[in-house]
Length: 521
Image 1: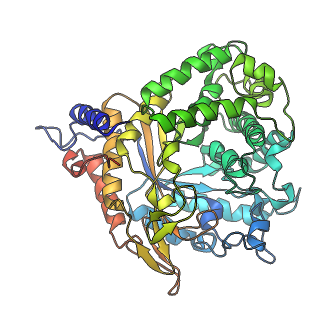
Image 2 (image 1 turned 90 degrees about the vertical axis):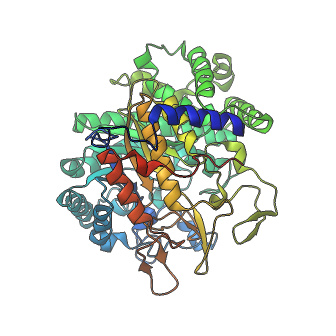
Image 3 (image 1 turned 120 degrees about the vertical axis):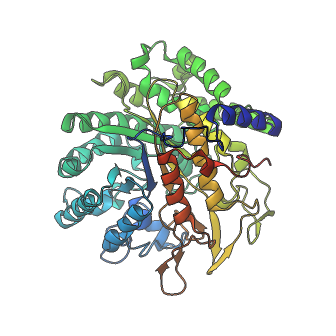
């Protein structure tokens, strides 16, 4: 979206939300309902520690760690042994929710054998949450699975049933202490990262057919896990969370497929309906420049025609193309065969920089701490656009479900103990303020937002490296492994988040006023 257009959108939202003003009598009215969740998000593999070493449970990152392709995860932040300290930090922030991961590889290190000691530890962690007044949101799959399933697990025809069986095994033990669930984290990122971008195991590039096959199986796995969760726990609140993307086929289309039946759309009508929904999505989110338009077109075409090495169940790709749905058979079999008309109780979104064309750069481009020779923009160079969060809340609240911002965070770079400032000048305090202002503006505009979870509580293992830092609390890994009171850039992000949460709960809009919401680039 052009800078002037974004400013116009911001101004309209700000007027409606009254951000920065406090009319008489309004200070005492909370800006969010009492049921709203403020929290932080984590994932098991990224914080727990104790994977892929000698005698430790192994996941699908094992071979990359052993080959030196990525930095070993090692102790991570030792959440597994020091979870009470970390949960105390959540309480100190004023949060009432924490997102945690349950690691399949830890609970079933050998096929068919559940580690009861590990299960007891997860139960203790959930109990510790409740003792502190924190509601847990538990993720059942966050990019990792046991090594014994192989790197290409999500290409296997039976992968969705195997995942549902695991959910049926573990959830009965955890359900007494949890009713909020994420089935699978960022299915779109997992499929793209594994088979298009090559940044996750097995690391293939431009294998669009395999990416589509994995996405098909992941969608089917979510639908089946949703059914298992509601059979075991009828009052469960279940979602999956896409990473917000400006390409419809890589984001909102997946949510639309999960909700098609509840909209009265038959399987034969799905292709035409998705084409209509595609138009709505692009009207609700940012308009596309020339490069972005090419990316969107290539994304739609690639998902529709690329062959997979493993093949696809259901319709042939030519039949899929004719229907213009872009999705093969397993996920549709699951959706239209489920006893539930809609396999979502809320829409989870992870909001960082959704504009796909922003992530493409020329090798040798300047970055924090030097130059990057990668063709993809580094995480600490992501474009910051809080007003875009309003647009994505709007786009995802259109079907009546509440929207939960399950992840939202700012990255900076730390290398060999040295923290580099972001080249755009953003810091975490400003980021928190302006993204929370966007959430309030979205709610004032009438869209139902039920939660805001910041990524992340502390600096953690960022999928192959400890250089990217997202923590509200920094971690000094070079001088004795200390969790810091500040973030890794030296800012009191924890204090700022606590003050913002208190202000929003008390109705103090003035705490949300500050610099512009949008960094125009």
